[in-house]
Structures are given as C-alpha cells and as structure tokens.
Length: 423
Image (cartoon, rainbow, N blue to C red; front, side, top):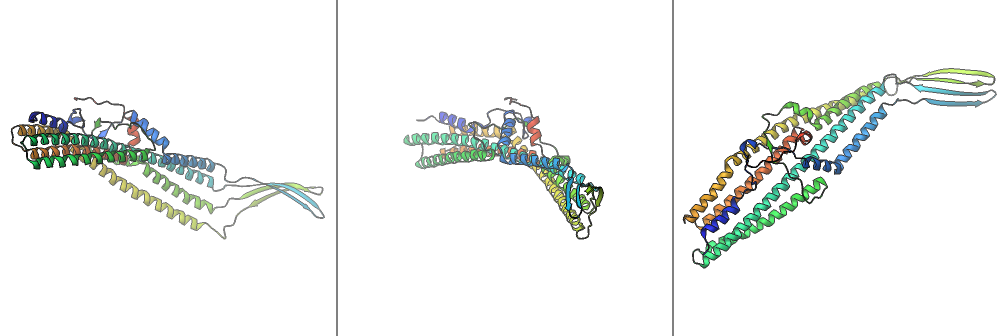
C-alpha cells in the first residue's frame, strides 16, 4: 500500500515550493525595482528599432532645420535690368532690398525655437511611452512564465495524487467517489497547464509586438526593491515630457501673436538704379512702402490670440490630469507594495505552515483524501494570487515611473545590484 507519509512529503514539496526561492527581509520590500545593466541596454535597442522613436527623431531634425532656416534673412535682394529702345536708348541696372523693419525674423526664430523644444519633448515622451510598454510587457511575460511553472507543478501534484488514490482504491482504503474527484482534479490541472502555455505564448507575442524584436531569452526584471515615495512631489510634473510639449506649443502660439502683429507693419523696399540714356548717365533711388488698405492683418492677430488661448487651456487641462494621475499612481504603488510586503512578511510562511498542518492531519486520519485535495488546491491558488500580486507591483511601479517622468533617469542612474539570498 502506498505510504501516506511519502505521499504527503511529495505533495508538500510540490505545493509549498515558492516561485521566489530566496528568502528576503521585509525591509527590502516596496516595489520600485532597480535596473540591471542588461535592462537599460535592451531598452536602448528597443528605442533604436522603434519606428515611433525614429519618426520622432526625424521630426526633431526637421524642427532644427526649420529653426536654422528661420534665422536666415527674411528678404533676398532683387536685381533688375531695364532696357528701353525708342527715340532715345535707355539702359539701367538696379538693385533693391526689402528691409525687415519690424523684426519679423526675430519672431520667427522665437517660434522655431519653441517648436524645437516641443519636438525634443515629443521625442522624450515617445521614448518614455515605449519604455513603459516594454517594461510592462516584460512583467507580463515574467508572470506568465511563473504561472506556467506553477501550473506544471500543479499538474504533477494532481497526477501523483490521482495515481495514489487509484492504488489505495485497489487496496480498498478509499471510495470510488474520491477516485473520480482526483481524476477530475487532474484533468482540470492539465487544462490549466495548457491555458498557461497559451498565455505565455500570448505574452511573448505581445512583447515582440511592442519591441519589434525576437529573443531566445528576454531580460529579467530586477528583483531588488527600493522604498515607495512618501508623497508625490508636485515638482515632478515639470519633468513630464507631455507637459513640456504642450508648454512649448503654448509659447509658440503666443509667439505667433507677435508675428501676426508684425505682419501688419511695413517693410519698406529701398532700391538703387544706375544706367545710361544715350550719352547721359542715370542714377536713381527708390523707396517702396506697402499700403495696408486691403488687408490690415487684424483678423490674423485675433486668430493667433484665440489659438494661444486654446493652447494654454490644453496645457492647463493636461497638467491637472497629470497631477491626478501622479497621485493615483502613487496610491496604487503604495497599496500593492504594502500587500506584497504583508504577503512576504507572513503570508508565505503561513502558506507553508498550512501544508505542514495538512500533512499532520492526513497522517492522523483527520482528513479524507477529498478534504486534503481541496485544501491543497486552495494552497496552489494562493500561490497563483501571490504571483499576480507581484505582477501588479511591477505594473504599479512602472505606472509611477511614467506618471512622474522618471523612467529614463531611473534606467540611466540605477547601478547593477544583485540579490543576496538570505538577507
């Protein structure tokens, strides 16, 4: 007859083996992972392969080219050749130049500089968004792998239990209903294992879609954690690239008001002409002044003012929403980190003790096979919940980094750290 002790030992080994094998102190828990060298290098490669990032970089180059062009003189000189043959032959050569009297060039330069700043912020925004998507996909892939490993251990457990119950039924120690229940549990475990394989394939496909890369082994998210911020510093909003984009567009819109006003001011044209009329020399000076009688550009000024007002309201609305998102991200980060800390501090140990108690009660004959199976499955479900909680911690950490504009500084400044098991 199959040994109860051996059965319980095998069950406990399968069920209580944690997904995170190392033991870590609760002081390390708090959810913002510190990056490793492989992760920043991987993100850099993702940026280099991203069409969105490359498109934003091209847009920045175009903005810089336009800024360089805006700093060029607004009007080119004009060369005029005049020849007239009547009773008196007249030939003259003239040169004229329109003068940027109201400094429209300066207004164009200021607008172009704001457009460059907006393009730079747009590039940072797209880089941050791409990095956040990549980190989130990596977290999902890691979770899918852990869930597959747990499903595999669960199916092994149910297979061992089913085999044991069959042997004990043959010996007359167990009812047929318990055998049926064990078979159903084993079938369910196999289905869950197949589903976990499918979810893992989906997670990897999602990561490939985000990064445009294929890899035999993807980088792992770091496991060392740092404390959650106590409060959301409003100054972090000033570092957000999406707000910088809108702020630059707002300043550019204000600059267009000044440009529209300058369009209604005269730019005189001064010309000089020299030539010959028969035997006489000719020398002339001309001044041309536009008359704003058909279009005084007042409507353009009004339109530019309304555009500037709209741009300012868009910036104010985005800042308000960003502040709410910042506080919400910190709240989510704090709550998930606290739940994870509670689990690591006591829940994981309680789970192990639960299995030890189940073993003792099974050996003492205080539990039927059905009761033991139900509670063992509950133990596995708890591990699955803990795995999903860890994913939520990662996702909330990524959301906090994105909401506070710290993804790139975090990747750049976080040194390599290795986990010290047993700390």
